[in-house]
Amino acid sequence: MGKQTKLQVLTRSVIAAGLLLTGCGKQPTLAIPSDPYGGSNSSAPLLNQPTGTITGRVVDARTGLGIADVRVEVQGANPPVSGRTDGSGNYTLPNVPAMRVKLLLEKPGYTYLQSNGDVIVQVLGGNTVTAGDIKLTAQLDAVPNAFVLAMGNLDRPRTIAIDPGNSQDGDRPQGLFVINRENYQLFGNIQTPLRVWGVRKFNLAGGLENKFGGTFLINDLQNPTGIGVDRGGNVYITDPGSNDVRSFSSFGSYIKPTGASFPGISKAYDIQVMRTGWFAVASSGNNQVMFFDASKAPAKDAKGAPVKPISGSTGLKGISVDADDSIYVIDDAAPAGGVIKKYSLAGQVLLQFGFRGGRGAGYFEGPTDLAVDNRNGDIYVVDSGNNRVQRFNRDGQFMSEFGGMGAGNGQFNSPTGIAVDRDGFVYVSDTNNNRVQKFAPSRLYQNGG
Image 1: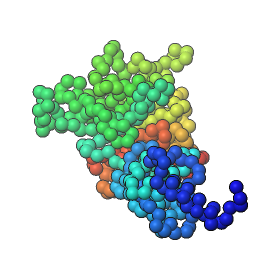
Image 2 (image 1 turned 180 degrees about the vertical axis):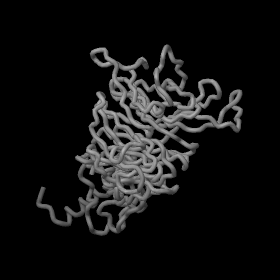
Image 3 (image 1 turned 120 degrees about the vertical axis):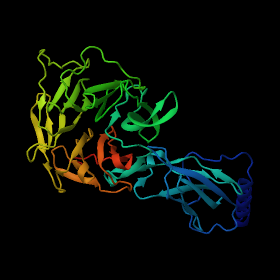
Image 4 (image 1 turned 180 degrees about the horizontal axis):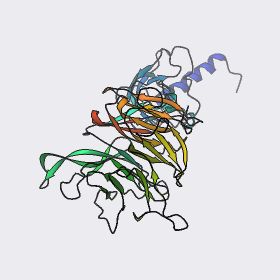
């Protein structure tokens, strides 16, 4: 073959391009992220080129929920092609050049993980292509404890607890248990005006999974104030009104006590399940934190000696335990500087901080509950009278607060309970706003950030 002229080369290129546009076989509607992008980085206008439409959805990588107001752009398109997601995370991009294109996404507080590969879509002229869900990851440490979502339709929710779940074989994910007032049902589904206390279980995305309790006269909850969950998913509720601790299975069936159950307690305010399977019970009637083994009998140490209770004052309220089985106690009648205490199992005071009265950092008006973030040691305290949550680092130093009086997202009206899941998300029962609110984790470096 002789030497080709520039005209011959150009003619063959045009013919080849025409064959690609018309297609000799079936083209994929969504390409697997890869390189190259078919010239989508070109800044030259694509005149008279066929176009198509891209539709799709942008979702939160953790919750699967749609993300609103994400800017979605076709990289390098000229004229520019972009749009924004609606309230459900859906987007539509018309007039996209018929070629392989790369999508760029932008929303403050979110990022697209490059390890997932580039978002590449094959667009065909005159057609609409539905791309797969694009997952963005919230930059949760950008705003520690920012509002995430609210679980509504509750009635005066009180204390809450996280089901630790079973992370080894994955047969039971983490969940959230909430003490809540319920309509009493008489003779099946007949509703009565009577309101009784019950328990609701939510998944961590806010979906209601189960509710139980809510009985009248038989095994009823008269004035429940505390709740704990063991590794099997069984639920334990302190009920000063009946001077008892009620037990329920993970499915909500009442567990009848056998033998002496939690002997010696008096008006128990709160209960926590320890790593060892023991129970720590805040017995406000005798101003003690008492310890019981898995059989609900008084706990004994390795030598067989009874484990001594931790003595407090008349202000004993919520308690919490961390991954090392250290015990954190609210004592609202303690001397200045000792409202919050951390104890070893032997009763040694490891840390104390906090003052009664006022709105300053480290001051409390009616604190009710506290929880520990086991990722970094952050300590969260519900400062109910000030309608806020205060956050302290593992050394008791004040780090931040969130909340404030009101009914908007992130505001509270007499919050009561608090819990932290294994990923550091914080849940607060916003009692007089009839909801539980979920907040983003704090940072993972020393002192919480």
